[in-house]
Image (cartoon, rainbow, N blue to C red; front, side):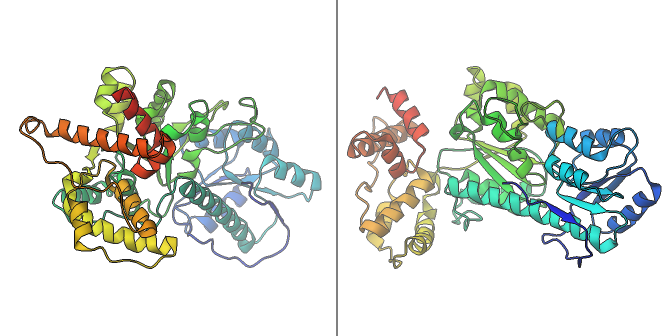
Length: 462
């Protein structure tokens, strides 16, 4: 999405940018001491950080050290024109918003500035409300662009926006709630483990929204759903001409998560080559867009999740040990639904209310017989399977596959995990048979990803 450009020459009333400026940072690049002083006095009380330099060389050094939300750039600088430097940093992969200021009303310079990616163009001398209005428009456009991008991704991944926490009061859930509240107060990297459908993303979202980063975006990405050949560009962005088809520069997910949280779901699916680059990002807090010649500072908290046994993947050489240790600063394990079966009635009621609204059907009462069947079932697909079962019940009035779990016999009582694995296999193969071998439809009914189902089938030799 390309932000609209604006050439400002008239006096306009200043309107504070929605979302506030308190966490914004601005870099001033101007060789006139009086202009630097004027801009600093104007902005210091409004923004979290304002820094001023007199040359593009000094500006380049600062941009390599930390992130700035906006650059106020004079065009008439010693050694190099501001518009030429702007073109250079765009080619290097820096996407900071830029307001170009100049004392000369030159239409050619204005056109070059906008083509190079300047968000606004101001003529000197300008009034306080003019520069504040230009800055406000830049902040508004950036906020809307990131918000639109995040909302589109949430629709793509079918994320339930209304879910901001965990439902239920079971004993197994209490330490999880306590851990989420504690982890929300610190910036540490967290690795969330657990079976598919146990609510790992919901836990990550809760950590974000309870944290000081809640004013910025939570950006989720399923690492297993992105093709290996484009995942690097997806995360870090790319510059124009970086590869065949890169007709223009593009920001990556780290850009959209700036100041907020990036959630790497299914992180164990990342290619080994990218694991090396992710490790460097976590250690250096800098990213390098594909094809770029320099690194860009970022302020992003990373929360990762996986349903794989990562330690086993490390032993087998499929996951880097150093990255595992860097991600696993704190580990949060989400319990499967069978370990918090007391929460099934509360979850079922919640999904009835939520889904009846979405489907446009009247909410129905969950009778005691149905609830008894639900609480005696093992739910191999966990909370996601329960949600799908409730949706099917609201539409069709029944849940055909729902049946109490078979009690363990003496022969398998010594190994409950093997018994549960057998139940999971039996159930998944039953649904696969009902769908005529259609793995996409079977995965949808089970509440798991197709990739998970394919992996299970491979393990069972099906």
